[in-house]
Image (cartoon, rainbow, N blue to C red; front, side, top):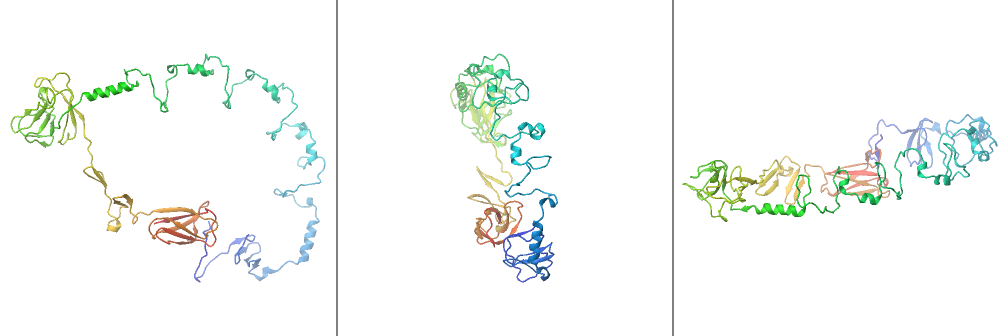
Length: 481
């Protein structure tokens, strides 16, 4: 593919070596002054002087005498068309007709005159042989048809419309487009495949239909009249029933003051000790949940001596009651988790077995690669930039957000240009630098690269120059920087 230049090439008086002039069998159309080509028929180079093609070889300037041309032309015009060899391609008639044809056709391949063709009866065309393709009617009809009596005969319009639908035979092989009309007078369907009448369908209960095989879009509407309480998995739950369940669950929770740590195994209820990685201090509230003697489970105040049970927080019997819930403050495993008393009924301190279960757990977060977590704030760790002496990770971080480092990452701007008038086209790329690479190519096939004048005129614009204004939207330019 030849490289296309859309501007002049200045070689600054340097040589063009080993150049081959454009070779053509005929002169180029629409030449410009100074254009040159090599004629492969006349075997010589020619230059356009603004008026005519002039040979660079004087031996090619000999002109055939005018009289010879006249005699030769008159001789050729004196021949009949049948004296020439048969054409090897179609003859373009340029809007003209062949006239003077014989009035009748006697053999295949002969041209038939208009009046001969028009005068033929339809059944005499092509020896009464059947058509081998459709005959376009151009919106005309066959008239005067008789009633059909055998397969293959044309049916007259009124005769066809008078037939009842049941008179037709064969199974329909495709859908019948109704054009907005409906079948009326339908009977009640009694078997599969029969059409169902509108009011009959609407009177069917929803349970009479087969189970759906996909989601049912409700379009903003709701199901009403549901049973007051579902009894099995998969059944729809009625609104008031769901609300009552939520309220009942919430009513069974009694929030208590937080505890410092949790003991999930049997411990000695005396002395300051380390539980779940936390060393207890005097008067720390500790939730004891794993005692062998379950009646000992509950909340205690830690001490260097014997621990005392907390019984003064909440209604009787105090700290322990059905639904009581605590937040665990410290601990390697259980910090941030919540525990509740699942024991029901009346609780007698020191007698009733008490069961404490985990109710919820805190979400723990850790920063991954490139991320820093400080308290509740996340930050992005960008590698050192080129401008700060680093290797350049391609990202910069500031209070306004994360952006690419233009010293490392190349950005791109592309646009389609050309209006058929402008030769100096300014493209605004807004990349913020004059350290850019510019390119230009055809916007349509074969999408080849072309050369033109290109300048990085500012940090936000580039100018593309052409000797001749490019056609509208004919070029695609790209700016990298």
